Image 1 (cartoon, helix red, strand yellow):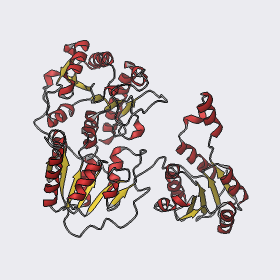
Image 2 (cartoon, helix red, strand yellow; image 1 turned 180 degrees about the vertical axis):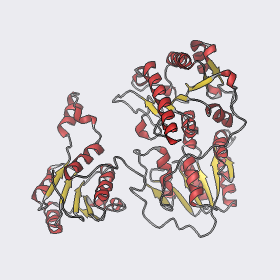
Image 3 (cartoon, helix red, strand yellow; image 1 turned 120 degrees about the vertical axis):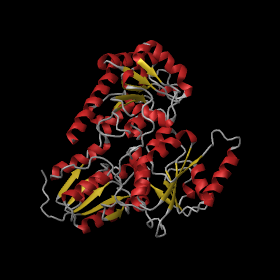
Image 4 (cartoon, one colour; image 1 turned 180 degrees about the horizontal axis):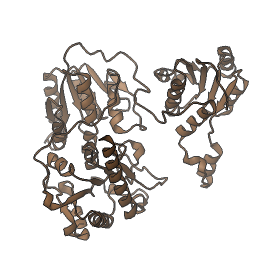
Length: 508
């Protein structure tokens, strides 16, 4: 093991490109600072990335690459205690080799293994490791424990001022007009806004079918419905909303929805502070752009929108107010729930598998299984009910309001769903949730939030094939769903239920 004896070592990390790979180095710097809080940490990057990298809270200085020999001279003049090469190219190896630092480390790039796999489809165990895991491996050689193994909120705060908000009570607009699941995953952001700005009045702009999610949180002072899907004229509806927002004189708009329409609406309404993601189609209309990372869960991505104006961004789902209670009684013996449908056909696990799963759940727990879904999924779910046996099911497809759906899910012991909105409702309510993922993957950040929840998926090189799913499998085989067995999903449901119960008992 290499040894660093100074309590304030000076360490250079080499990762010259690309921006995505540089972003992945953040946990390396977090762990180094945790080991040596007084350490001076620097990074060598290409000049075009210097501005973005300088925002990292744990990097003390950015060293722009100025050519091989000038950079080597600068590295030697800096007298580093250690150099960690996370690039592993001939150029980075030369700089590390010729530098005078006593400790030199290098990560293993596995270039040959990648070429053999891409060119000849020869697999290698080396490729099973994520790049980030390989970045962290050299730290073991200098005795640095890995407490931070992934990207975290606050790694890359946005540049600029602290949003320039006026003092005193604020009027804030939260714009989220996406799908049901997206709205559920926005609830922790709404909760954090109310925590940071205790006297703020927060108005939520959302679609009529998702308004109940936000009203159940009890955190929104007002909900404005965006009827963009049902209005006779989208242009007239847009104009109406702009007029409503302008009349309320909002101080700031927080926009998790990455659409041009949402950003344009906030801009046309004259809202002075407009915070959204750097990948938004309307980013040119934002006053503050926050780095968008697929490596964060969507809950954490949404929370990062407050990074220009808030410090601690940790949050949990707010408590959702009870309505009139579950739309069934104890005599119905409902113990588990399923959501077999989705707006996207490729997100739907085959119906005969759902039917077999329902029978296994009912037999294992001596009760009935709740089936939920929207009005457009009545035929799909009815066919599943018929195969599973009506005696094993309580089919409420298309029979509940949004608040009714939440109350139907709340008492369940476990909930199994395709990658869609009800899965996130279950997670938000603290119900153990299992997500069945086919065309999408957990890396996109929309998996059920919470340590006890599970994702069941098949590792295929063609996944993900789409961000939201599609009407048909692009390759025609639909293996991402067909290879998932009933046994796998049932075991995940049982593990999820038992894990949640143990965690709950441990908290008592």
